[in-house]
Length: 160
Image (cartoon, rainbow, N blue to C red; front, side, top):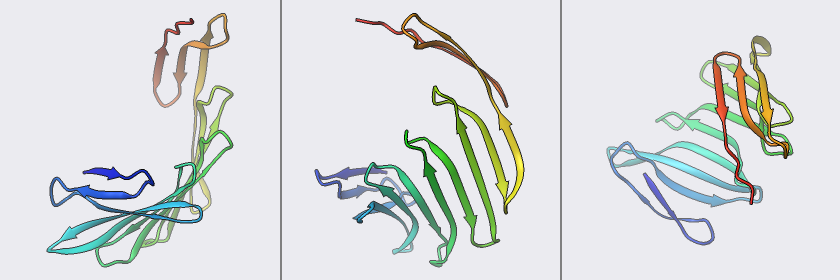
């Protein structure tokens, strides 16, 4: 699915590729805007998702609908001052289970710990040990992450 927006951010026309693609409507709100995504079955347009965004284009909430129109899931997101996601909360309406993920960051903006709660009980905690090598200007040029799995990143910075 491709979306074409005008200069004010409104969807001009959704471009459907097949029947499984979404029809999208964008509505402005005081807080930002909502993207409402529909699926069409047997000629009937049914709401599938509502995605809420603030004025900085950061997603704050998603509501998931069943084909019969009932809400089945709610995702809510919280961010820190740097725009990094600090909390992701999923409420499954159909079974009453609430899952919350808390993300903790280091000075470089990497996730160093995630705590996962289910119905208020801590279920899992993941810690990442991260080591860096910095260049003479204080920018990292090598990063190794040891946590659930091992990853290394290297980058070359050219200064002008």
